[in-house]
Length: 180
Image 1 (cartoon, one colour):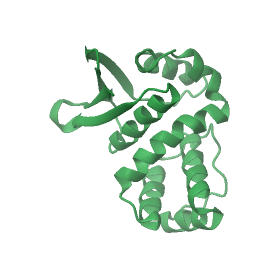
Image 2: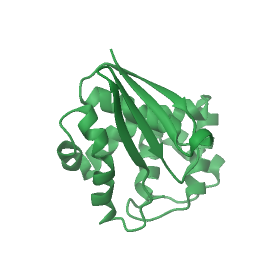
Image 3: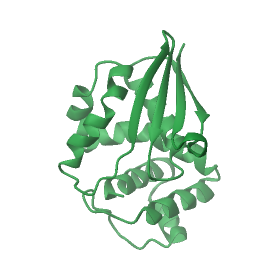
């Protein structure tokens, strides 16, 4: 996983608990890297360890931490220089989700080892979008919930997000976005 993800975890941890808490998370995870480089690839296992350690230190389930991280990710990536790319990827929630794969393809031109997820958006009725999430990585479905919630905030749309099917059932996770 690219260092950009680990930097975002670091920023969120420092924002919530300060640098001492971030240092404790790294220590508990057995990570002695002083600074993550955004464009450098790190083993996925390192990210999983950081999430597990942060979950223990903040005393919240990893799923909830990942959901909060998903919302944080939207703001973090905009600040890290991807704001323009986010802006041109869609003028509303559905259009943005439908353009996620294209956006990831553009990002892959600068991050050749990127292994992004894929999203399929289906409008089931005028108040519901169904999102199919395909990923080689395990355990990030709660982050997708947070991402979708964060996108709802970004587009000023009141939504709820439900995880209605796990990857184990059909090879992909399914989420439903309900417009309120």
